[in-house]
Amino acid sequence: MIANKFAVYIMTNNRNTVIYVGRTDNLLKRIRQHKGQYKGFTSKYNVVKLVYYEIYNYKKMAIKREKQLKNLVRRKKEILINQFNPGWEDLYQEIG
Image (cartoon, rainbow, N blue to C red; front, side, top):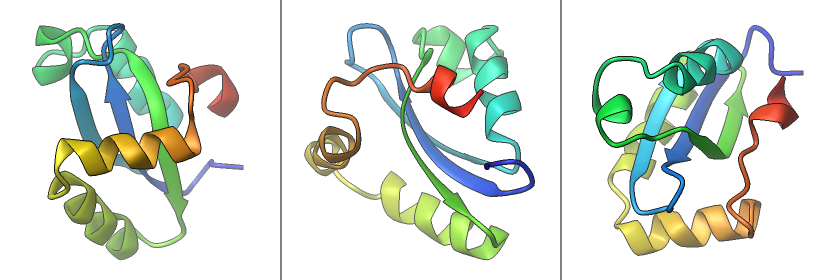
C-alpha cells in the first residue's frame, strides 16, 4: 500500500527519450497530474509514463534518494529502470 507514504519516481515519454525524476507524498495523485499535462517540464516533453518508483516511510529518506537519483548519469538511471521494469511499461495501473 502506498497511501500516506513518500515516493521517489522516474517517468519518461512514450519513446523513452526523456527521463524525469521526482518525489511526492502522494504518488497516485502526482502521476495523475503529470498525465493531465501538469504545466512545466513534463508537459513540455510529454513525460507521461511511470517506469520506476520507490516507497519510503520517511520524507527525509525520500529527499535523500531523490537527490541521489537526480545526480546519476542517464546510463545508470536506465540500468535502475531496466532492473525494476525491463519493458519500460507504464506502472500507473499498478499503483492505482
